[in-house]
Length: 168
Image 1 (cartoon, rainbow, N blue to C red):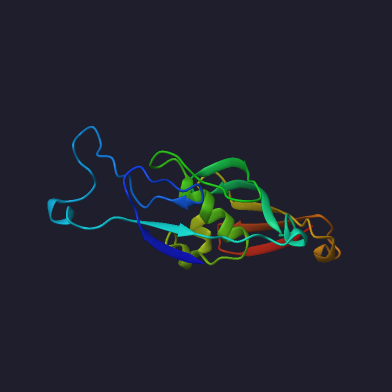
Image 2 (spheres, rainbow, N blue to C red):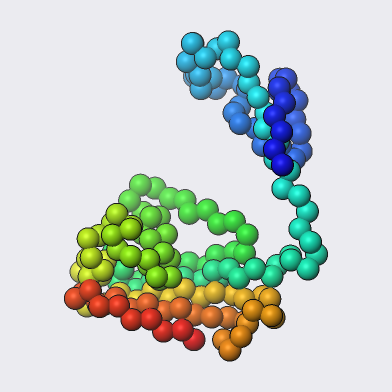
């Protein structure tokens, strides 16, 4: 449920996120051009509701990603948390490559990533194959099936463009 209400300077709400900072920066730029200065600024409040007790911590999530010889990455592992993860870093540090590896590890197509024309192009120059392992955590006992609490989806991509999957 979303509601809009006019904001007044200094008015804060614990459950609302501010759309912009009402204070001008030190450099005199308040983020708006002079033609925007007469606009009324609004605060948007988002009510996320309460989760049912039975639904808390029961959703499958990515716990760990292991990347070998994929695009610009030789070897890298990243551990993720259950709720929200942010991928931050300098330009060219591999943020998009990590996200792309997750997509490819879970069945994405090379063309959809806008990073390569074929799967083989995603294997870096240091090897003949790329291996991506996406470790999933399945906290809900009703969803574990034959794989249990943790499932690993492993995708191997060869330089020739062949791809295989393994689940364990």
